[in-house]
View 1 (cartoon, helix red, strand yellow):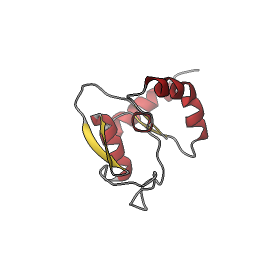
View 2: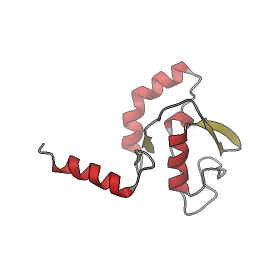
View 3: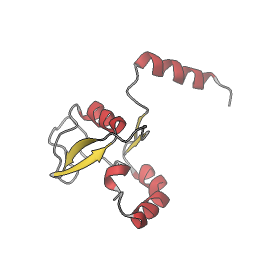
View 4: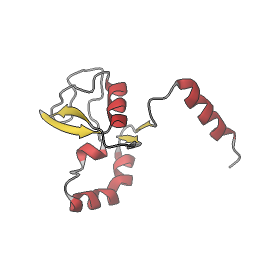
Amino acid sequence: AVSYTWGDGEATLSVLLNNRSFSVKPNLWACLDHFTDDATKTSRAGRSTNSSAWTHIWVDSICIDQGNDTEKSDQVKRVDQTYSDAACVSIWLGDIPFSTWKAAIGEVLEQPY
């Protein structure tokens, strides 16, 4: 499963999965590109054509029918379970330099809780 920021703007890019095209925001495109090396890979039933890439991936904006309000409502209620059941959860905060990310995380870790 991937947790990511949806990002700003209405611009979309196309991703091909199971021979079907999906429109995604630029931030999700960058995430998929980063984790799979090629966001245009065609998958069948969640299986990547590249053995070094993820074999299954759950992305809310793709796996949940965005045109179906009932499905969206039902899935929002289950999203915590989806992430809990995932073998691995990757978090994508954006395509930022490692030094920026490291500094931000360091500040968070230094805070007393």
